[in-house]
Length: 72
Image (cartoon, rainbow, N blue to C red; front, side):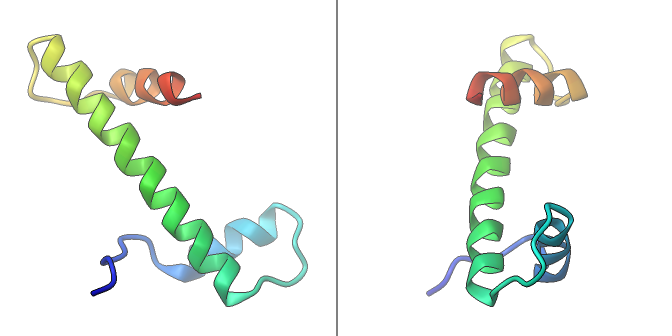
């Protein structure tokens, strides 16, 4: 059974075109969506861990930024 997607395809295609592509294949759009969802989930998990470590239940923008930095 395929994984349920969170992001719709149309904004992903627009993002690729904003990056300079004139045309975008459906498989390219689906692949970028999978990668972005995977990255977003990783960032969210790290941010949750950072909030828990700080004794909070609420994930803040700073947690997201720190989580992103950790992945870079």
